[in-house]
Structures are given as structure tokens and as C-alpha cells.
Length: 88
Image 1 (cartoon, helix red, strand yellow):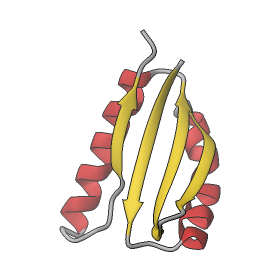
Image 2 (cartoon, helix red, strand yellow; image 1 turned 180 degrees about the vertical axis):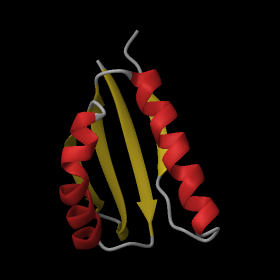
Image 3 (tube, helix red, strand yellow; image 1 turned 90 degrees about the horizontal axis):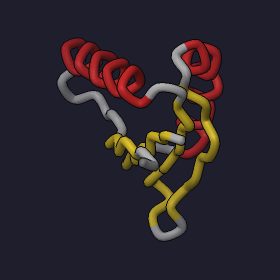
Image 4 (cartoon, rainbow, N blue to C red; image 1 turned 90 degrees about the vertical axis):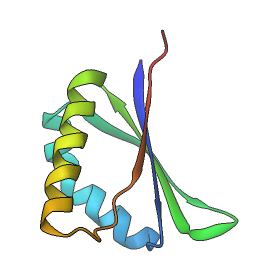
């Protein structure tokens, strides 16, 4: 089963949680299912979250496209660092 691990710094847990909850229906349509959301115990402004994904290549392309569009709108936008995980 494939996953995407995301890490985002300099943000509040409540803000990320609210954003992910709002985006959940759209994520699900694209085959991305939030499994975990954590706050780093040593750095509460670092948030990590894990998606289980139905199609890793599709989700990678989607994330890359969405992040590129966000950077075009605002070059200083805070975007998570994404790690794409496959259990071959």
C-alpha cells in the first residue's frame, strides 16, 4: 500500500487540521485518504500527516501540479515537504 508523508513547519496544528478536514472530500475523490496527523513533540510548529493513496503516480502528479500552481500564485507560500512511499 502506498502512502504520502507530508511535513510542514512554521504552522499551527489547528490550522492544518482545519485545512485537511475541509480538503478531505476532494482528496478522497483523488484517492488520497488521511490516516494520521501529528504534531512534533519537540517542535509543536512542525506538523506531519500521512495519506494512504490508491494510485501513487496519480497522487504524485496531482501534488506536483497543485504545488506548482500555489507557487505561481505566491512564491512564498508554505507548502509541505512530501515523501512518496511505496511498499514494493
